[in-house]
Every structure is written in C-alpha cells, then in structure tokens.
Length: 224
View 1 (tube, one colour):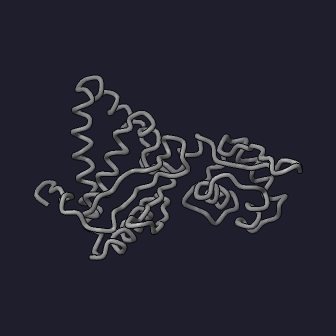
View 2 (tube, one colour; view 1 turned 90 degrees about the vertical axis):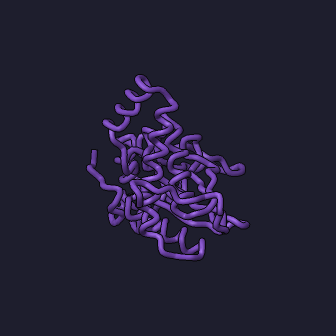
C-alpha cells in the first residue's frame, strides 16, 4: 500500500481518487486535466492504484470507433473514505443484535443520532435554510465527509460521496436512517434519503426541504 491519505489531495494519486469519488468513472484525458500531470504519469498512478485494488478499469464503446478505457473506484477504496470505520463498533453492533435484537439496536441508534444532531446544531447559526445546509456541509467537510450541494425544486440536495460508516452501513442499513434523522433534527426540517451508496449509487442524496418543519423538533439529549 502507498499509505496514501485521502485528506491530502495535493498529490496526483490523491487528486485522482478525489475526482473519481466525486465524479464517477473517468478517462485518462479527464484525469490528466484534473491532476495536472502528463498522460504517462496518470497511467503510472492508475497502475499503482489498480495494483492496490483501489481502482478498476472498464471499457465504454462510443459509436463505431475503438472503445475507451474508463477508470473508477473499487468497493475496497471506499474504506479509505470511511471516516468512522471501526471494527470494534461493528463487532459491538453484531453483539447487540445477537443479545438484544433489532428493536434495541434501532432504539440505541436513535439516541446516538439525536446526540449527533445536537453536535451539528451547535455549529449551525443561520436562519435561512440554505445557510443552515451550507453550514452543515462545512461541519461534515471538517469531519472528512465529501459533500456537494445542489438546489432543486423546493429542496436542497446534499450529495454525500463517501459514507462515513461504510462497512457498518453495508451490514446494518439502520445506520442510514440514523444519519438522515440526525440531519433532519439538526436542520429543523424534513430530510429524506434518495439515492444511497449502499444501493450502488454514486452518492447518497439527502433531500432537504427548503422550509422549516414544525413536525421536526430538536431532540434534547442530557437536557441540552
């Protein structure tokens, strides 16, 4: 392994991984432009990343010409971007499922999500929903979560490109609901989960209502 840190996008390898994470499959030419190095250097980086099992290549045919090579992240690469990937946490969840059952797990995840919402809410000062979502995206970025915002019809779409709980969520999808609920409580509006990385999509899409919701009340944790 190269020991590459995904927080450091200054290196060509880091820029390639970051671009593929945010944009999906890309050609040599596209990666050459984003990394600022020659096509030969890009191929060298891709060869190393492929050897490490982080990138894979497929062919795309366009018209009658020769198919072009496209490169994309592998399932293994997502563990690099998992911010809270902890084998102990996964073992504890398995043990809880076996000893207490699914209902107890959901109850505890709901409490964890409420505490997470309190942490987020303390850092969100804006009154307008657009400002609040932008502040949340900044908080997530500080935690190593790659996000983009997109304005839709009556919603703001928060694209989350790296699942912070990737391995845990791949086994226990209640984690996805925990995160959705935390966002909803922190922002004070309805949030729904559209596309999800765990279903093979390029990003998780959280659809944030542009209007505050009286039905979403912040959950007090330890009286705060």
